[in-house]
Image (tube, rainbow, N blue to C red; front, side, top):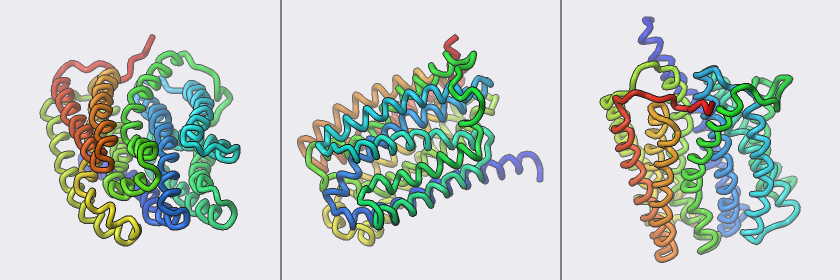
Length: 412
């Protein structure tokens, strides 16, 4: 097998393992865990669960993914150490406890038990989002796949624990996240060593990198999960359940952003060539094509899937399938294109894009939701996510062919 074929085979194999792991985990969540919880909790409580878990997801995708991506890109400059990122994650753990308290008070469901469980769940979720970097840095996608297999098994064990031991739904997710963190702590290297909390000589640059990415991520993370929070506060748990079911297949597709971007950034950080306008345009058009196919697939699959797994919500939700899923698809392809942009420019460009996106999101989603309910949030998300794709495409095309700056500034 010649070098080119080996490289293509390697990329396809890595992408397959990466997607398989994420699909297994999220498939189990959507096909077993969430339908069972919906049946056992009822529409209102299931919506409340989704709105609380939205906050957990925001913390995980903001800080866990920021540390993950920062370490990946900084490793290109040989400037990554365990201590710097563990110090950052320790600070995030303290923040997670405060966020748990504020969330439960805001939702008027505070209790000592809920507070302890939500704090643990949030901390473990941040660590789990960060933890797969252990396998991505070494491009060990078989290890990456096993990491997500263990999460999946943990969720199933947690579901049994919820049913037969405790009535706390958070226990279901905690068991899965804990399994992953224990696995990487034993099997990996990122949580090992004598200087686990000792800053390195690159501390300033690493912390600047992860802080900028956290600021960038929090905007898109809030946007991806704010629908559940807004609907919970404005219309209650049942509205959250209806919209969750309406966008379910689109959100599953959007979750492919993580494995796709994992492989993209792994190879882009090792690619020494320049990203030209032609290359960037090919990326953008390819993503549009994939998005179009995924949109039609999500619409058709939603009709079948929701009818089988969420029959009580089907009649209410089906009218939103087409446009609600399109909004999620635009989110998916925009974030993948942002990963290419990370290779071409500093994180400041991503920050500026997400600030503009946040303004459009707030201007469209919030007033439309308050005025028109579920239809309002459907149209608002479509406007916001479609605009983001256009903005990322324009900035990427502008930056292509120009002299590249380091994607992560040293901060020295």
